[in-house]
Amino acid sequence: MKRLGTGSVRVVALAAILMLAVAACESSTNTVSTTGKSYTVALAVPLNISLFQDEVKGAQAAARAFGINLKVSYLSTYAEAAYISNIESAIATKPDGIIYGWYSGGYAKVTDEALAAGIKIVFVNGTPHNDANFRTAKYLAIGFAGPTEADQSATLAQTFAASLPGHGLVLLVNNAPGQPDHAIRINTGKAIFEAAGYQTDVLNGAEDTATAVANVSAYLSKHSNVVGAYTTGFNSAQAVCTVAKQDNLTIPVSTFDASPTSLAAIKSGCVTVLVDQQFFAEGFFAVANVYQALRFKTQPVEVNTGTYLVTKDNVDSYPTSFAI
Image (cartoon, rainbow, N blue to C red; front, side, top):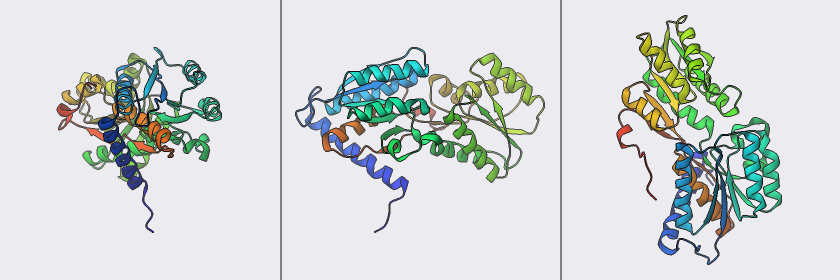
């Protein structure tokens, strides 16, 4: 029997979940699932910003379709300890399922607690796939909706490399040094650019905009052969754009995540391409993943949402709001 590749498995899984969504929309009410049992699912959101608000809207849309009682908790400012505490509080309410992001090995203990309590888990946005120290069978068997960093990084880097002149230096700017997911973005991009014949260099960015601009300015003043900047987050992309405009430089920029500011940068020409992990889809398919596991006793699957490339050619058709 022919073995399906990863992409084929994702397509089949995604198609199955979509079929469930259609069936649920046709036969369920807003409060009762198709089995007559109302499942309660907790969604712990790490940060109350526009991107994660879209994730919540997606989760709410799926909850409505499947008759899920969705309980959402937010953090106003992300801190790992506070987020883990929120997850633990959600576990204590004994939901049927729980959805949250795995962003470091610090989430192993709380995940073990949820597993021990018999709660169906689906990771969203962050996954052990991005954490080499915890890429084990126990954690990888848990469902996930969102981008696998290596996949979305390769999608962006390959597209960006093809738009560059074929020689010169590509500057890779790490928006969050020390974070495993950003390290994967850097390492994946670096390998792809070098395989395409480019020189590469890595610069650490900064969350503080002024510091990020100063770092980029200092680097570009000493390197006139930079032909493109691959950035792992928009703060770094904006820093490159700012310096390029100030110094009258032409440097194509690529980045991650579609926010109002990054989409505006695409429209202005500052950023040439970004990869969007589609937060609305993350939320929707995370809830669908939990539902199919609870309803049909199936194993939650990996749904890769991080494949949407946005350029000047399609930015005007990008959905900027989601009515549910």
